[in-house]
Picture (spheres, rainbow, N blue to C red):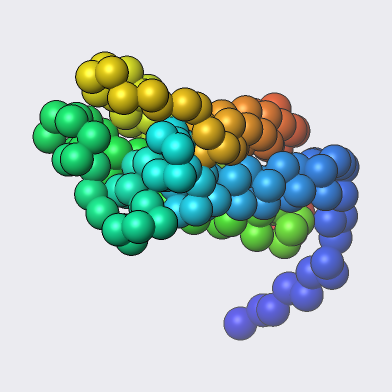
Length: 172
């Protein structure tokens, strides 16, 4: 039996030479996804907040979306947007952790792009299916946070995919 002792070798620090900005983008994207679907109101009507998971009013507390006159499809798009945003958030945190560990996580970056695209499609459906029943809906911070999360998430994932592959060391 022989044991080959291999030193740490080249850590290939240039494989992802701008890793801290990528980590910052991933965490900013994850935070924006979480805030947009959990705490972000997508529309407001006076003091009433309407988001993907339901509505909140100062006089009635939390509620669903049915009072706004939307269809069941609109409510399902809202729940899909909420779930997609949270899944994209988790994938972005995984990507940030892998990059912080000095890895080049191509699979995590591809998964992040798929999660962002899926959440984005659900969000587009939620926005397009909004009821047009004369209520004075006004765009609010949730839509802006979600759009910022998509943009920063795509930039971070693409920068990981465009980086050169990590060099392997050892005796083969």
